[in-house]
Image 1 (cartoon, rainbow, N blue to C red):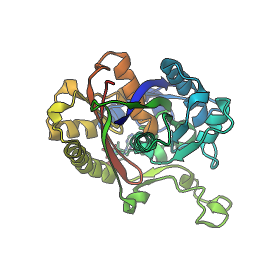
Image 2 (image 1 turned 45 degrees about the vertical axis):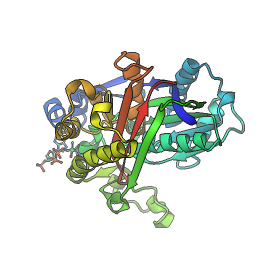
Image 3 (image 1 turned 45 degrees about the horizontal axis):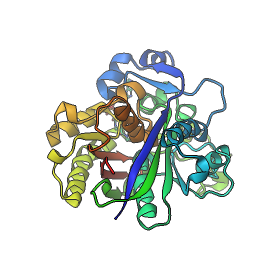
Image 4 (image 1 turned 180 degrees about the vertical axis):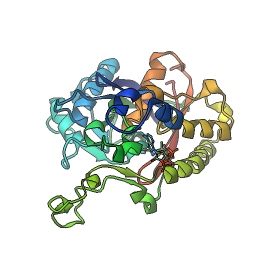
Length: 337
Ligand SMILES: CC(C)(COP(=O)(O)OP(=O)(O)OC[C@H]1O[C@@H](n2cnc3c(N)ncnc32)[C@H](O)[C@@H]1OP(=O)(O)O)[C@@H](O)C(=O)NCCC(=O)NCCS
């Protein structure tokens, strides 16, 4: 049977370390508030004044993942790029990355599922691989949030939680009798909450995309109803975890490690408590990176592999995320060929 396995991962974090104290010098906030409400201690931003887009960070992560896989870019059948912070409004960064990789006709799919970008991307890779449409698929999740945040006190609820970063995953189709690779995925969207977390402009629904007569510059920055998203996460994350376990015919005891999306440590701690998950079976790194959105889960996966926290010959992982859209999703992945 054809299975979708992870051949390699790679991550790229830009060099500019931004502490909570650094943010406190830009806006009315404090290290204590950010740590207590979000768990975040620091994040990384792209170098000040440099022209760096999501495809540039994605390129660095891709080079590492391709190198680890022993693949040349030319061998890729498909590139899937997930971001909410594209280099330009269109075309998507998948096209830009493809050119930067020196490719001239490899197909690309750009997706915009925000914090669930990896889970949606993985399910697309799995569908292409299982159907025989592709064998070697590159997924890239990459975000440059820092150039699009309102760094005044007005934007502090959003600005303190996001960080820049990228991660790449090489997925490969293999023939095996073993139950490995992507075991089950579930994806959900509730568009009724779209405006609870959004970046409105530029907007095709508005005359001149709203830019020419934009009196309220805040509309050029993301806005969020934090408490609403928080409450939805507390409900949806446990729910979708149980749903994917049921789909896979597994229980939580079958899972060696859970990697949840990193939006707020308090959300993940509440999730852990609700699900009764021991500390050594859940991984958080929001403290170091903030929320890197589409990069978050593959970035964390790359770290846990590097740290030897999982056995890449047999561990079973559960990924779970919720974010703008509203989208929420989960998947179960088992290592081993
Ligand atoms: C954004 C978030 C951290 C805010 O935390 P919170 O505990 O809900 O805080 P509130 O929004 O209730 O604000 C509490 C107070 O802190 C203030 N505040 C907000 N951001 C602040 C900051 N960075 N520094 C200091 N004070 C801040 C608010 O203005 C408010 O002040 P008030 O009581 O005088 O009105 C939290 O709501 C959250 O993480 N939500 C979910 C985010 C998420 O999952 N997004 C989806 C993925 S991107």
